[in-house]
Length: 216
Image (cartoon, rainbow, N blue to C red):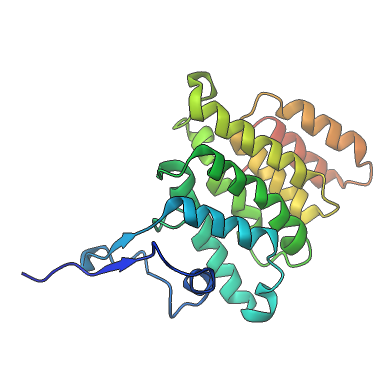
């Protein structure tokens, strides 16, 4: 009987991990479940790699094309792979402290990369993917535990992104707040609108929709 294909990422280098994400020739495709690919990961180590990437992401602009970055960031934020952020944050055995550091470092990714290179759709949808569990009810704050703790971590990170002087970043943060359903969101949005009188009517409307947890 043919043995299932496997790939061991437990000792992957940071440089190879970056290539895995952004180089289409290296990426493990999510549409190959029948091939039986088994992937072994070190969840704690991969969280550390994401922190390293998000803290200093500028090198990506010279190493990969805009299309490769767009596709790679979609792969990062989803649930298609064991190494994707969605899986690492939601389902992995990485300690909460490591996942917390990973989430918090996303504010630097927005500040140091996305504020100047908004790509196409991945930046705006970044928090949609990562915060949607609270929108659809899979996670609920009243349960306490990680449902509450992760929600608070995402919330405070989104506040940092909302404070950046970039509508691309602000709009993405509002999108995330609209799905996260944190109880302090209306207060944060009201303050944001008051502190940004130059916002267009459309931008204000989007912010108010986020405060009502009514964004697409």
